[in-house]
Amino acid sequence: MSLHKIMVVEDEEDIQKILQLSLQQIAGFNVKTCSSGDELLQEIDEFQPDLVLLDVMMEGMDGPSTLKKLREIGNTTPCIFLTAKSLPHEIEEFTQMGAIGVLSKPFNLAELPEDIKKIWASKI
Image (tube, one colour):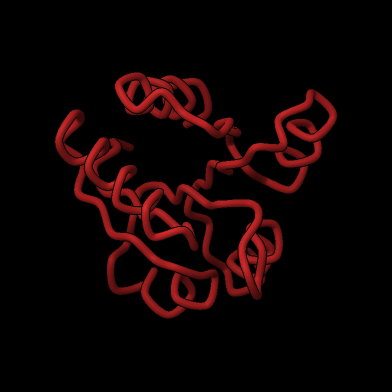
């Protein structure tokens, strides 16, 4: 399975734009952004991403709740959590929820695509 299409779920518009720019311009990924878990659930079937980058802390439905909902509806798209909460026990908790990895905020935008590719290669 190759990695081409990424959905970014992030409620901060500035971070959305930065992530989209980094992933499209540096790595050439096809990127769609969503501002909420609800928006992801509405649009994931149409976009059919290879990977979802999912912010942990969001208004309304948070990242873990969104991942749980995805799995409940039978969607198995791999997810990487984006979070400032990156202590070892927190990372372990997120991977036990079903995330294939965790990327810590703030990110190095130049390294972000490679970090995503490394997680993808080690888990898929």
